[in-house]
Length: 248
Image (cartoon, rainbow, N blue to C red; front, side, top):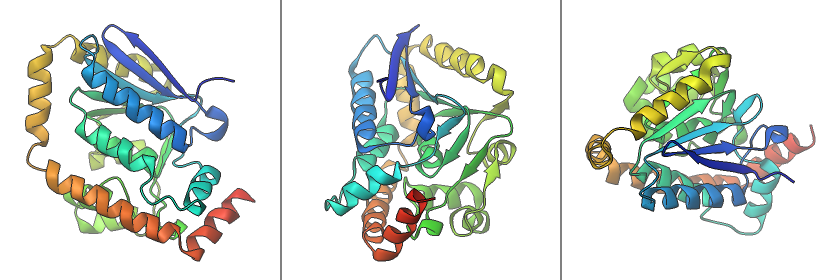
């Protein structure tokens, strides 16, 4: 059985690949824990200067694995591993490059808000379906998207749950650039390796300076969002909607 998270260090870059293509790289509790540990270890490893994140197959990340998600909820989980992952990604000292190779849904989108540079393949789709699932936004998206887009456009994505494509994501500032699918990984890898060649201490300090004015309030938003998210998840409406997804 293949590992759900592939990791490799090349040219001082930690390459992480979500590797559940048959499940559209939906994230399990165990995957969150592994990602959090690998990211934390990368910040401590002097040989690693940058991180590159992508997905396998034709999806980047379809959000949470619903069966795994429901099982954890029914077991009484109140602080999911996804929160630790998002906070670690938000706090990451070294630069993170994401290559969105395919569909991104839910946390597959909100995690991008905490990456430093994001490239995406042309023609792919993004969606934030939290309200459709009787849930609420997570990952700091209820704070970051209104700041980036204004209330009305953020409401279109978070309340109406309208899908959007990679060209729109670039206009919104959620991603940096769009590339043909065939050249995406070459471009994103070259970017990550270029960052890794820059002076490491200056890179980490510059990244810290970019984030220092929003860090504490945003961390509070992430925690409060997850608290409300888990409260919604434990309501019968969300449980039924999610269960219906499993039986489609």
